[in-house]
Image (cartoon, rainbow, N blue to C red; front, side, top):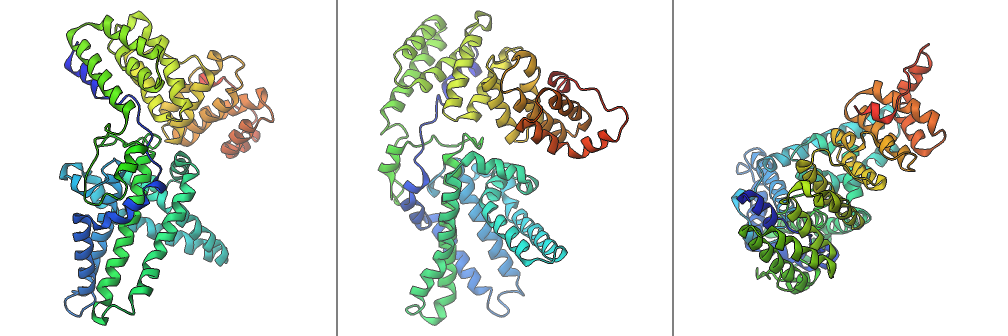
Length: 472
C-alpha cells in the first residue's frame, strides 16, 4: 500500500457537514470589518480617499485610482478566501492567495465597460431607454453571480458567459434571490448611516467618515457573498481550505469578533465519531489489514445513522482495494445515487471519475443517474465530459424516458461546446423521427435552427444516426 494511496483515504472528507445558511450568520458579517486587518484596510483606504480629493496631494487623480483599486482588491480578497472557508482575517496567509485574484479589479472594470457599451448600443439601436433599463437591471441581478464566477475561474470571459452565470444561479437556487435582496439592502446602508452621522460629525471629517462607512458596508457584502459561495462550495466545485462548520458550531461562533474558534468537530458528535473511525481504518490500512478494514467499514454501514459518511468511507477504502474483486463496481452506483439524492452533484461526479481512474471501462447502469451527472457537467460547460457520460446512452438504456433529454444535451455539447454542427444536426434529425413534439426535441431544434433551415434547402440532408454515433 503506497503512502499516496493511504493519504487519499485519510485526507478526504467523507461528507461535508451541513453549513449554516448565511442568514443565520448575519451578525458575523456585520462584525467582520472590525477585525484587525480589514479595519486597518478600511481606515487606510478611507484616509487615502480623502487625501485624493485634496489639490496636489491627489496627484491629478492617480491616488484616487490607487484607492479604488485597493478597495476592490480587498473586496475580492475577503470574498475569495471566505468562499474557501477562511472566515476570519487572522487565518489569512500569503500562500492562500491565487495569483489570478490580483487582477480581478481590472477585469471587473472591463466587464463594467462591456455592459455600458451593450446598454448604450441597445438603447440607441432600438431607440428605447426602457430596453436599456431592463438590461441594466438584469446586469445588477447577475452581478453577484459575475463576481462568483470571476473568483472561481480567475478569468473575465467566463464571467461574461450567460450560460456560466445562469449555471451559478441555478447551483445556489432560490437562496440567490435572498442574497440579492440582502446585498441590495446593504448597498443602501451607507447612505442611511451617513444621514444619521452627518449632523454630528465635524465638517472636516465628513469625507473620511463617509469613505469609511461606504467601505464598511462593502466589506460586509464581501463577507456575505463569499460565505454564500462557501455554503454552496460543493455545487460550485470550490475546493475549501478549512473544514466546513456545522450549524451547531455556527451557533457557538455567532458574533465572535475576538477570533476564538471552535474545533470543527467539537460541537458535532457525528463528525467526532467520523474522525475516530477514519483514524482507526487508516491504522488498519497502514498495517496492511485490508480485510479487517473492509469488514469493519461494512459493519458501520449496516448500522449507520450517518449513511453518507459511512458509505463515503467505504468508497474511499474500495479505491485501495483490489479492483478485480468487484466490490468497487458494485458499491459505486449506490454511493453516487446517494450523493445525488442529497444534491451533492459535484461530489457524485468526482466519485465516478475516481472509479473510472481505477476501472476505465466502468459505467453507471441507471439512466436517471447518468443524465443527472451529464446535466451537471454541461452546466459547467464541460462538453467532452458531457459527451463521455452520454456515449451510447440510447443503446445502454433502451427506451428509457430520459433518452430525449440525453439527446438534447448531446446536441448542445456538440454544437455549443465543440462547434460540431454537422454531428449535432444528425442527432436532431433522429430526434424529429423518434420523438416528434417532445420538449427536448423542440429545444434541440431551437439550438440547431440555422442548420435545420439550411438542411431543408439542401436536396440530400445528412442521414440521421443514433446518439451513440454522434458522440463517437
